[in-house]
Image (cartoon, rainbow, N blue to C red):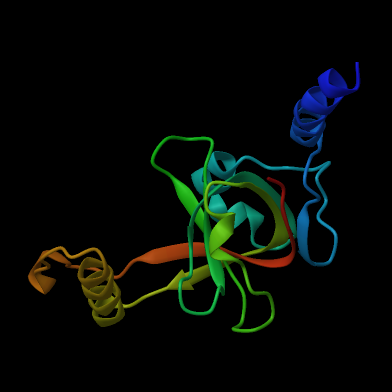
Length: 156
């Protein structure tokens, strides 16, 4: 009887370990998970969300490799995401967060770029992605939005 129990023990320990959920990894203030706004809703009319805190959720698709100062969160709409950005050192998001679900509460910020700043930003992004870039293809400045979080939870 005892040898059979010893053989079953590792399986029981393994099965027990599978049912245990990891604790969320929290940064800053607690997030308000009761009032989540879909990223697609924010991005449809972003200027409507600049004055009050918002909470978003989605899968982390990218993390800053140098300082962990930003993450990109996938939207509920295909091929859309929103970057969350903090001052270097305020929160340090781990590379292991990529692929995990995250919830973030903060303020949506609008950044307005003139033509030259837009060209510089597009050139930098092309270089980072190993793509060619012709500045002449950019003919006007652009706006972009990012969330400055006060709280972030990485859930899994």
